Length: 223
Image: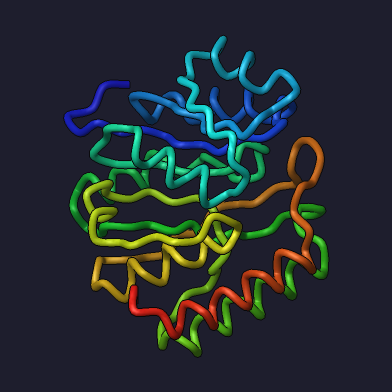
């Protein structure tokens, strides 16, 4: 797909051979390039991605946020699309949402997940609600899904965001800072399905870490 604006997908990976092929095939019609930022995969993730035309960025250091920060620094694009490599996010409305950003209606779209059967355990649902509620209270914002990892945004806004988190809390941090910096932010719904491959998220551990990060961020001068 050729666009007057360059649109690039950035996808973090670590041992996602079961889902990465599906995700690349679904995203490819909407973007000009696809990059995976791979954190020491030991399976066939890189091989599958390369075969399907994706470009590979190696990030040996651990962390969801670290992968994104590395990817964002290395890609050249007008619009960046992100999502997980496990096939959990529907791409059905991706073209529509990209067009909204291209039309300069918003600077950042975060996809509010609509969980389908089996896609999110009870603890995960409760954890998301708690983290979103705390985010809204601490930062006086109004969002529905602070932990969503599917975004479509103008890359130029990154220069005004001092993104710090190397871990899963990166997903809440980027939304909060986009809103607090005054960029045009909106949430749009996407269906959310059961992931392909092994679950890597530790609901309790990562939830506590994200909660602590929110309080740390509240006292930070980067907001």
